[in-house]
Length: 187
Image (cartoon, rainbow, N blue to C red; front, side):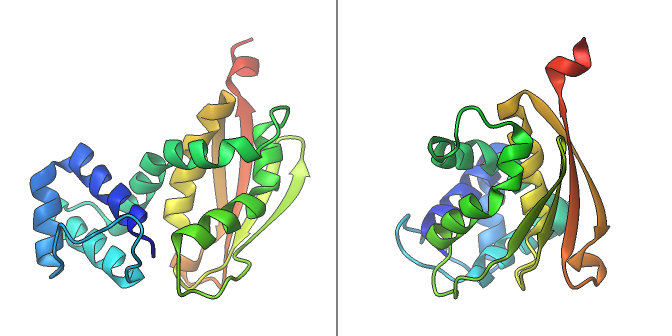
């Protein structure tokens, strides 16, 4: 995993919980809090160990922290990806084409991991897309945080139904995403 993900995690902890919590979480995980270089590669396990320690320290469930981190990271991910997205696309269009963006991001963020197709997206209607996610990393909470936060870039809101989830023992996560436009809702 690239160091910039750890840098983003460090910024998330600093802004939301204070610098002392970053030092406490990394120390509890047995990790040097100042070791991360943006362009070096680090173990995905370290990422999980830091979040697990932060979960214990803050008494916030691990998956809630993953969701918060996804939401926090969304604006930076948007800045990276928005240049690749046609300006006339709706949020549902972007969700339908999410695999092409997420695979590019994950290829840059993760190293030492064989590139696999972890996302498939199916357009159900004008405002509904079903996303199926399968990965041994089980980062679905992170993904939901990103997706819900990114809706604001389209002046939209996103509601997600989850008939299946790996965190509940299913083989894959299935997220049925319903997009509503804030402008239309106000009229």
